[in-house]
Each structure stands twice: as C-alpha cells, then as structure tokens.
Amino acid sequence: MNNQSQNTSFIFLDLGQNGQCLLSVPAFVAENARVYQAEFDKWLQSSTEHDYWVTAPDGTKALCFDGAEAFVAWLNQYVLQDSEVKAQRIPTNR
Image 1 (cartoon, rainbow, N blue to C red):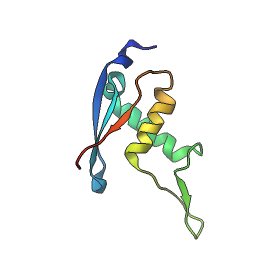
Image 2: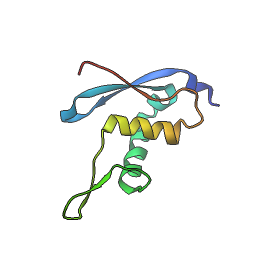
Image 3: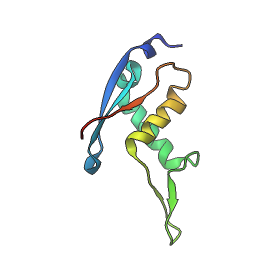
C-alpha cells in the first residue's frame, strides 16, 4: 500500500448551480486532483461501465448524475480500490 494514502486532504468542488461540496481524500489524490478529474470525465463520457446514462423518450442518450457522488464512487472503485482510506463527501451547509 502507498504510505501517502494514509494522509488525508480535502478537495473543494464547485458544482455550479448545485452549490459546493467538500471531499475528504488521501493526500496523493488531492495533490493530483485535476489529473483524476480529467480521467473521471473521460471515463464518464466513454464508458458503459456505469448507470449514469439515461435515454430520453426520443432515444437520445444523456448523462444524469450527482457530480460529487459519482466522482467519489469512481475514486473509490478505480483509484483507491486497494487503499484503506477512501474518498468521502463531507456534509456542508451549502
């Protein structure tokens, strides 16, 4: 296991009209947050390994997801699968 995964840091997410939230993550994830965000975005757009795709009545496919929850789930499944420390969404008043 990577010793860095024991140190916890935070990522502040601006979800636009959906407000903001705080994620608790291992330090190495926070230090590379933009890289992981780009990997998540690529996976989200190109993957069929998730249930975030919905089909409209006219057959058009679109993504429908809570950005913070989806990012946390992806981090835990693909980046932190072997880590004792997992990503978590921290409740906030916003």
